[in-house]
Length: 252
Image 1: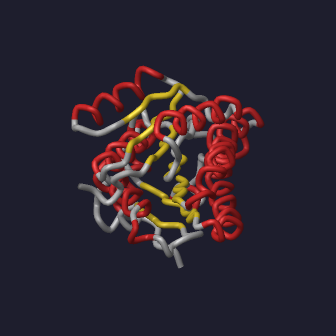
Image 2: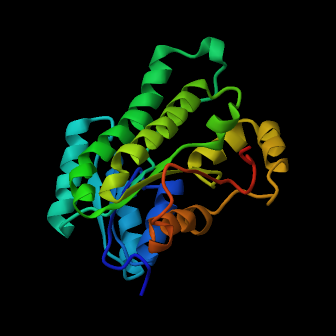
């Protein structure tokens, strides 16, 4: 028995890394998990892991930048499981490190469409279901955005826009019993591993500032935090940014 028994969750971009960890953690707590992602082979592997552990899961190919595909994803989940209770907006394309002076409109478009716009699409598409009975939306931003780390201009812009969108939704949708929160993880995702490999000295400097001294485990640390936010014990928390980053960024 888990705290999310009987709940239906959608997790975008859950074929690997933090998204995969979140999907596994939600399933471990009893939720049926629908996994959306552009690379079907990857999301099918996550589904197989969940099913092998005795959980329920569904893989649906989806590019969240395309509103039609997002609407089709939500419709397929509602058809398969009857409703949507939890939405986790994890999908986000990350581009290589680049100085602000060299950042292009195309860079912004990639990060914005995959992250900010994808989050917006999924929130709107799920709203009719969530507004019927209440629910949870957990969006993913980044301590990179909170800190304004150099080299991440387009990514930071997308992630900070998601935090702003979250605040608006928390105020507008609270009357429907919908909580909307943000987590800023520091987990062992392909993006963070790629950054570590591309800029080892910068990564080591960041890690040295993490009080807990390590990256978070995507399933147990990051996924565990999301599962807690989705559970009954967090029904009075909304509009918040939770730094699930080992203390790297302690908000003032």
